[in-house]
Length: 229
Ligand SMILES: NC(=O)c1ccc[n+]([C@@H]2O[C@H](COP(=O)([O-])OP(=O)(O)OC[C@H]3O[C@@H](n4cnc5c(N)ncnc54)[C@H](OP(=O)(O)O)[C@@H]3O)[C@@H](O)[C@H]2O)c1
Image 1 (cartoon, rainbow, N blue to C red):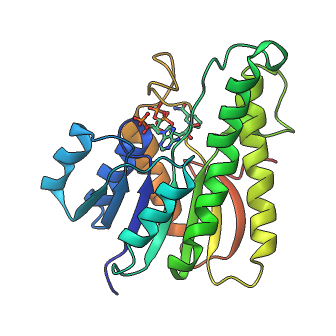
Image 2 (tube, rainbow, N blue to C red):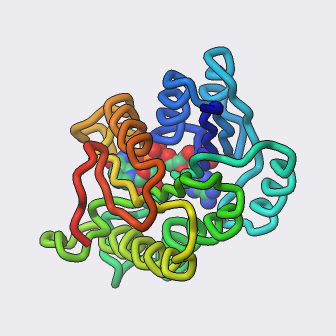
């Protein structure tokens, strides 16, 4: 079997950084993208085959196109995982949030990952996977408390756009995984979260490795459990 190859998008810190570390530990060849240089990511170069692409803002179509051009000579990927996301003023109810903040959250969390998937799906090897980082908070049926309303809505929109994207590519020889990482201690998840990055990343890598070769669209958490839509 040839070496597995992953493209991890949004790897400067938090879960993206943790996923790069874990994929390298598991013997994958990793290409990781950041907006700005990340010392923590650069340090991982010592631990395995890691290529870093800077200046990749997923909200910038020209930057995504530049990345596609930069990677045109490299072999196709088994996994393209868009991890990047934001939770700006997540505690403010949607009705009170400045419109530009709500719009930016929707752009980064819902629209941009799908545009990235559209730009890169031809770079997936047969039997490979596109993974998009969503959240259990994006589950409509599990929404009881309603907090983080704009963030929730952006992830619910991502889930819906992903299912539409899969519908548009129904004959594809790759699959799509919407991943919930658990509640994880990162800048976004906060200090009270129940999981550390290592545990979440370890679980997600195991789930994604098991998912290779399967088509269709699944909504899974870091333990492999299906999350209800
Ligand atoms: N932590 C949790 O409990 C939790 C739970 C459910 C889902 N998630 C999801 O997991 C993903 C990662 O979150 P995290 O907890 O690791 O958060 P984090 O520590 O705040 O990291 C966010 C990452 O996204 C990148 N990013 C944000 N906007 C971007 C853009 N426009 N283009 C490119 N990169 C961008 C950031 O890059 P910069 O360093 O350049 O800002 C950073 O690498 C997000 O999609 C989040 O919604 C997290």
